[in-house]
Length: 171
Ligand SMILES: CC(C)(COP(=O)(O)OP(=O)(O)OC[C@H]1O[C@@H](n2cnc3c(N)ncnc32)[C@H](O)[C@@H]1OP(=O)(O)O)[C@@H](O)C(=O)NCCC(=O)NCCS
Image 1 (cartoon, rainbow, N blue to C red):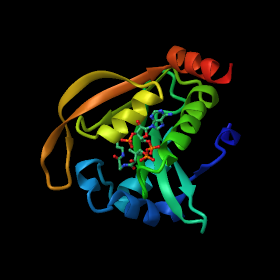
Image 2: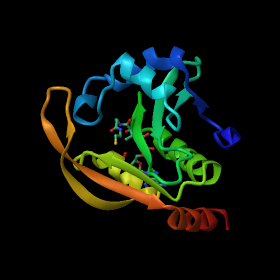
Image 3: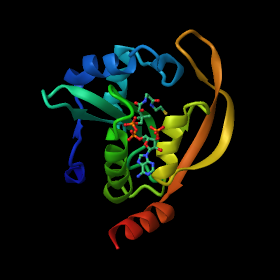
Image 4: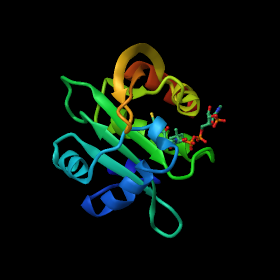
């Protein structure tokens, strides 16, 4: 099933340093949460929790995804993180469809969820373009590194919508 990922590979503990650097880029504190090394290690050890990374031309990670609930058919499959070192160059639009193929085709998920800050317009445009739809605002569901609580927008795409989109793209 991992062969669905042309441009991504499964991350391991050796990637955590690079992942933490990507997470902590200046300006990203408004956009994404940050996990400590111990939290990343705990995530990597959890069943159904997978990290994927994209490597740049030098072989260094420049993007990562954290996914949870994979293979758990009674629960939600969630994209906890999608973070790129160099945003706005089309890499997100290339990688996210590969991740969605892994989630739906590879793991048989029925629904794929994410939470995003409602002012993160670039991310929301990309998610809508990939078939995600707004579900609802979750009041004070997120916390920035400075402790401020923020509302989050819950977005989702289900298997029917995803497969319609895939069929349209391949016809
Ligand atoms: C959000 C993020 C992952 C998106 O990846 P990206 O590579 O920057 O996104 P892309 O350049 O592929 O695509 C985004 C843009 O292209 C547009 N786009 C991409 N493919 C498109 C298509 N086929 N048709 C129309 N629009 C398209 C999107 O609407 C969006 O518009 P904008 O950048 O002009 O505002 C990246 O910007 C990032 O890491 N940001 C910081 C961390 C973050 O916010 N993560 C998400 C937290 S939920």
